[in-house]
Structures are given as C-alpha cells and as structure tokens.
Amino acid sequence: LYLHFRNKEEIFRALGRELHERAMAAAEEAAGAARGLAAQLEAALAAKVAMFEIVHAAAHARELLDENSRLCGDVSAEFRARHL
Image (tube, rainbow, N blue to C red):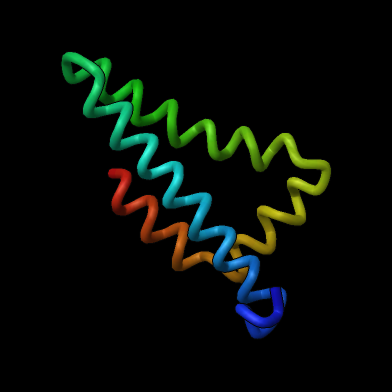
C-alpha cells in the first residue's frame, strides 16, 4: 500500500472517496431505473443510506466516523452536494 500512498491518512481518504463514489453511482443508477419522482427519490436515498449502514455495522464505527470527519470532511461535503 505504501508504494501507492504516502501514509495511512492518504489510504483512509482514498477509501472514503471510493465508498462515496460507489454510493453515488448506486444512487444515480437506482434513481435512473425507478419510475416516478417518489420512487426515484426513495431509490436514491436508499443507496445513500446503504453506505452508512456498512459503516455503522463496523466494530469501530464511532472511530471511523470521527476519522472521516477529520480526514475526509471535504469528500463527505462534496458527496452531500452531489447527492442533493
């Protein structure tokens, strides 16, 4: 890993960005496949919530969320803006 990343913070940011990108792609795909505005909104929200369920299921969820805020606040903010 350290041949591709300078430190563990950079690894964490890359993982955070990847998880957000996957959630965004799932939300876009779900919303595009759904019929009607209510179904599109529900599908997009469900895809976003699925990412949080993965994190909250982790043994160290609180620590992951704290580190995400510290190291990836900008990534999370960008994802929220895109998702809206």
